[in-house]
Every structure is written in structure tokens, then in C-alpha cells.
Image 1 (cartoon, one colour):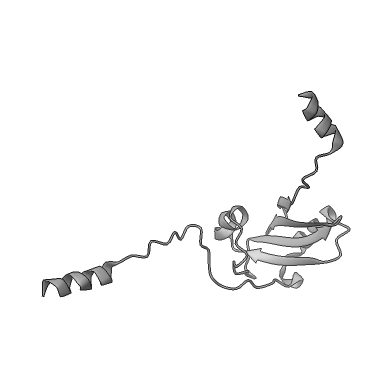
Image 2: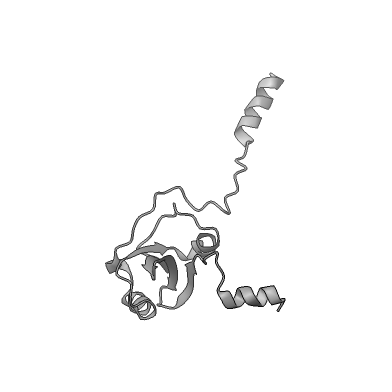
Length: 129
């Protein structure tokens, strides 16, 4: 009888040890239509990036902002009731992402830096400056 009781309590009280702090959701991403993005966000984006012809918008809930930006999760569910908007775009031959608040304030721009440093910087490094 004691063995059955131990097995039952172990099963009932076993916990999932998965770290939920870095896992936002398993829901597939949903693209956000440009019409769902506030006008002020779109206006400010095009002021900053006037040559962009194609962009992809995503919305992120406010409570997931830190996890989404610093620990990027491409499977985060987008939401029409978003607190932050990320737009993916190509400008000057480079893939970039920009994040704007719901009020249209630019928060950050993410782009990959090329591995080749500009010549003046390479010369300064070689001179030990």
C-alpha cells in the first residue's frame, strides 16, 4: 500500500521545471496588416526610412516587450492590441528591423553590421590609437 501511495503522490505533485521566463508562447506568428498599425507609427517610420518600398509589420503586447526584443522569438503571436510595433524592411541593400511604441516613438533599429571595418578605423587600430 505504501508503494502505491508514494507513486501516486510523486505523479500528482511532479512539477514542470521548464523555464517559462524565456518562453513567451508556442502560437504561430501572425502578420499584422498595415491598416492595423496606428497612423503615427507609420508616419514616423517613413520619416526615418523614406526609401523603403516593402515592409512587414508585427505587433507585440507590452508585457512581452523585453523578452521579444532582447531574446528574439520568431514564434511570438502578434496582436492587433499591441503596445509595440516592429517593422522588417530592406534599406540600402540591408535587412533591418525597427521598433516603435504605440505612440510612434522610435525605440530601436536593428541591423547587422558588416564584418569589414571602414579603412580609417582599420588604420587607427593598426597605429594603436
